[in-house]
Structures are given as C-alpha cells and as structure tokens.
Length: 55
Image 1 (cartoon, rainbow, N blue to C red):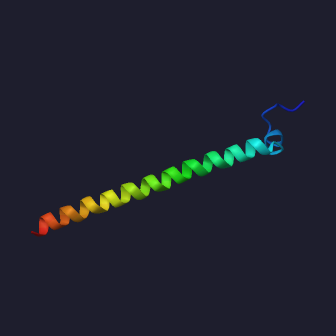
Image 2: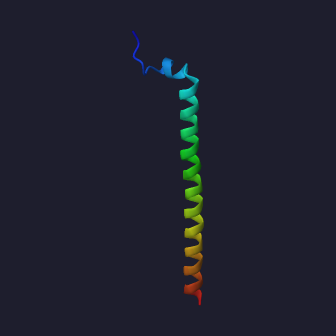
Image 3: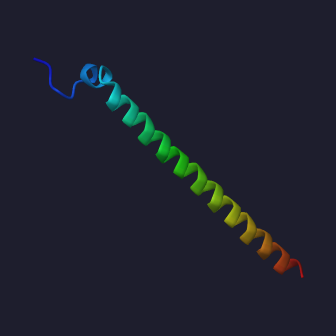
C-alpha cells in the first residue's frame, strides 16, 4: 500500500497540480513585483541622496 501523499498520487491528481502551479505562480509574481517596487524605491532614494550630496 502506497501512502496517500505519494508523488504518483499527487501527480495523477490534476487539481492538485494546478493548485500547486497557481500557488507557485502567485508567489513568484508577488515576489517579482515586490522586488521591482523595492528596487525602484531604492533607486529613487539613492538618486535623491546622490543629488543631495552633489548640491
């Protein structure tokens, strides 16, 4: 008897696969947009600091 959570059981369940793909995609999407926002925010701050130092 194979355990219920064996890879074969999960792989043969389309719903579980789609849920996993959707979850991973959502997490990656949120992560990427978060990094982009953080990056642009840091860029703005660094630019402002550089300008403040120059003048």
